[in-house]
Length: 374
Image (tube, rainbow, N blue to C red; front, side, top):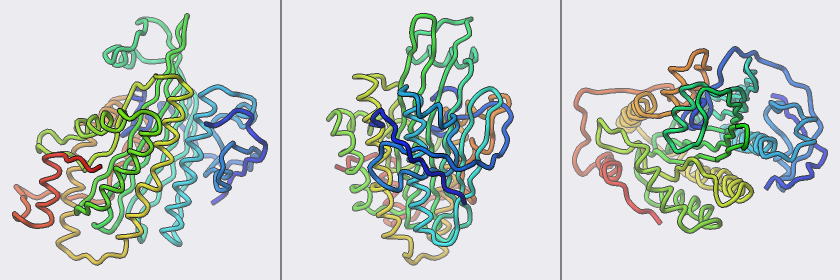
């Protein structure tokens, strides 16, 4: 797998969802094609040496990004870094198996980089997707945005730009939780102004409850939030608990995390700094529990329970997730990216209920009644 090194210094500090959020990522419309990308020369303003290598060539030409201080350029560079950092971390844990890197283009504007690992020793399926897309909003997209309070004119061509990174990790060992996160930036141009906002979140779906792990996970997210606003963590935790609900089952998908959308305060710079801290908290919040449990022993019962809980994951994503539903009903959507979040295997049993007092029942109590962890 090729690495793409960026050497020249970017002068500025690198301090949706409507058009295609795929469990928080972006649905990319139109046809696409795979590419083999040349090595680029560009250096990003990131402290860690590993941040100098992306998984593929940037979607926007490197020369354009190098000259620009616009938020859309800075966001693209940042999400490419997040993708690369996480993929290389997971590859190091996995061992021999590497990510398949699929760079694609969107006919109407933009493209993305999908990195996928399947059938690994540690990770049964792990996908990290970057999307950078642009075009004109559809009437349905405008209506959905207006329902969320956006002041947009109907019946006019409204150019948009969306950039985001989304990820779902389904480990093989039932003692290791599933992780999902996404962070995105969106802007819409009108005659007199450009509206912009950020959105995203990180959440955890364990199969067996390890309270120490959950407290560490939430504690790491809280620290990232508290650096910006002490109200962010409690507000965004509640938003997460309220969003990831499998309503027909009367339970949450997991033990939550943070979730937010339409963030456009206090300023663009401060909102971007918050997004960066949240995204940079993903690896330290999750990787320690992977290393802690990936070699734990388990048997048929634990695997069966994992598959049943994955069934609930599928139910939520296909029935309730706004981005997935929007993408599936969008003409020429990139279905592979939309369904990247689903596990390789899942299971359903008629009227299944865990034995009272069992470890499985312990998890269900938390899924039915969310708790405070920090």
